[in-house]
Image 1 (tube, protein in one colour):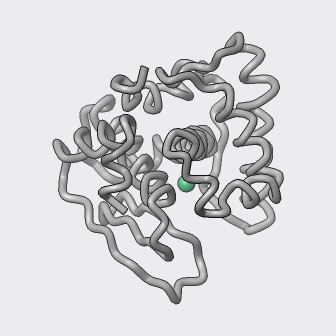
Image 2 (cartoon, rainbow, N blue to C red; image 1 turned 90 degrees about the vertical axis):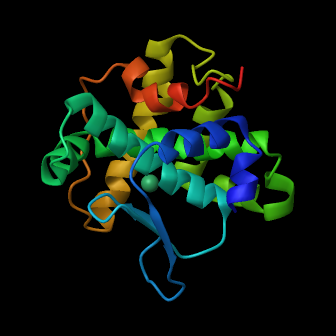
Image 3 (spheres, rainbow, N blue to C red; image 1 turned 90 degrees about the horizontal axis):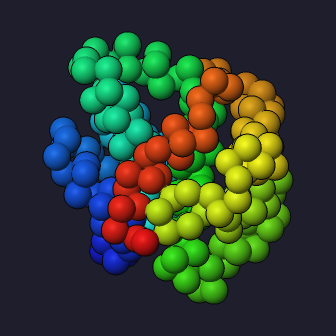
Length: 194
Ligand SMILES: [Zn+2]
């Protein structure tokens, strides 16, 4: 999985950036009922499958957390988690877009059947449209307001409704964040892609 990620310009940069941070543990639990996830407090990714794009998505969350940590110059994990949670829906959509553009660039849809998966769900369809409009630098091809209104915000709404259905707490949308900020991590790991 890591070798697949290293073949991608963004995946490689993501791993390079994470190498400069604390060690991240990756563990596998195929019997877990919850999906793969990243736990910031233990700095651990728990994978329920061997999909490189899922691992990339979880490592992207690790990167987002570390960026919050760097930005706020604190190592207080409770504080960082609280700051992250204020915009966790924004981060989730950015992470979903990162995963989609990775799959797109790796031409991974044909072999994995993942394309059909994206067409099946509300979130998948929206992320597909949002990801198709992202250029190599991590910027939308379209006007940022338009991108927010028709792609980013509708993806947020779906994430929030799924969170409500699954009774997830700590999923919040921060409306005040600009599109530059919402895609800021994606842009900083895409520097070698354009
Ligand atoms: Zn996620």
